Image (cartoon, rainbow, N blue to C red; front, side):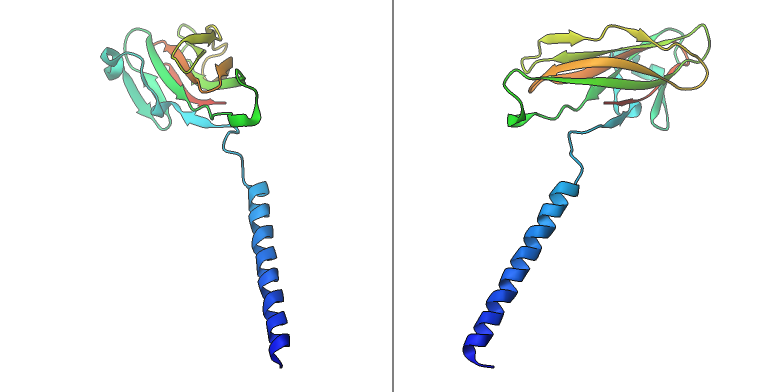
Length: 170
């Protein structure tokens, strides 16, 4: 094989390798899940809303159970991804937060609210308190959530004795 033919074959080989790399990278970017899509956070990753109430909580798998004789508050932080330049300044992250929880008896309850804060820690939104409607099996509480760009979101749940907070999804 002459020198020109070898050089041409080498150039074609490099071009094909480059195209292969570009196509693989492109495919992985399209197929990769977006990090800003739905998240689920186990209640065990949260905390007692007040340090003095920390001893009232017992973990069970992903859930936290109030073991005290009175209602106690459980806090869940929500990771909100920055929206970057996809949306105009002042954009509000708008979502539904679903809290899975469980009432121990018909006389006890779990109620939760979602809140949004701006980057300066100013309160900008509250869903209002929403209660579980059933007892026995775990059930969902659906809460609206608005958070300004670069802000933060959280869920607070007020849990009667033996009630559980299991997880939050958004």
